[in-house]
Length: 113
Length: 116
Image 1 (cartoon, rainbow over the protein chains, first blue to last red):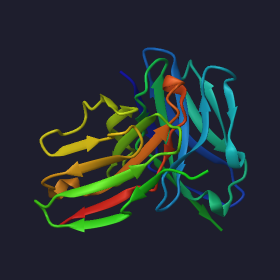
Image 2 (cartoon, each protein chain N blue to C red):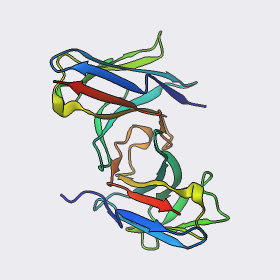
Image 3 (cartoon, rainbow over the protein chains, first blue to last red):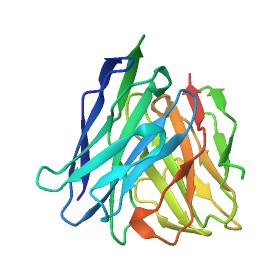
Image 4 (cartoon, rainbow over the protein chains, first blue to last red):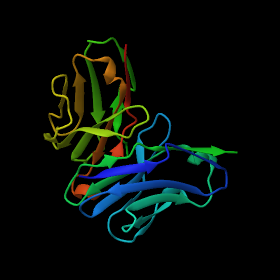
């Protein structure tokens, strides 16, 4: 079985500060890992995904995430937060040959001016 | 390219009434998903279609929920009768259907259901 844990339901940063959103996964087989973002009243959209190529994955809007197998983590970072980054972020896991994606509970990011 | 379209965007009904949600996926996407998103939670899969075939409906409460994708394109999710606990956002997503677990899913804006 697969699962995802997002540490911190809410994260608040100042504009220009580092963004770090934490995600740990559990999977008995090599995982695929995703970060999706959800803006208010919109559907989820893909930020980036890990599919067993490079462990450091770069996504849209300056976000990146690093797959660390030893730590079973896939934390999302951005060097400098912007007001427009305020949204809810979901980490998700799936596996080779399977279509079922398991989503974490989400982390709401607040950006202070 | 048009995204995933869902309607209605909002629905308020009284308990025990029926309700239906409609989804039109991105053109050419063979896989269609219906998710339930409760407040403060991530999406949870209700049902997945490969073309017109429901290939994973294990999480769909079949006593009151039903879904169809008759021609392998758009889909309808129905609840009858609705209960107070069904209040949530119902998300539809689609994907190409040829990359299995590494596929990107494209989500619609969701239908926000309130059952009174």
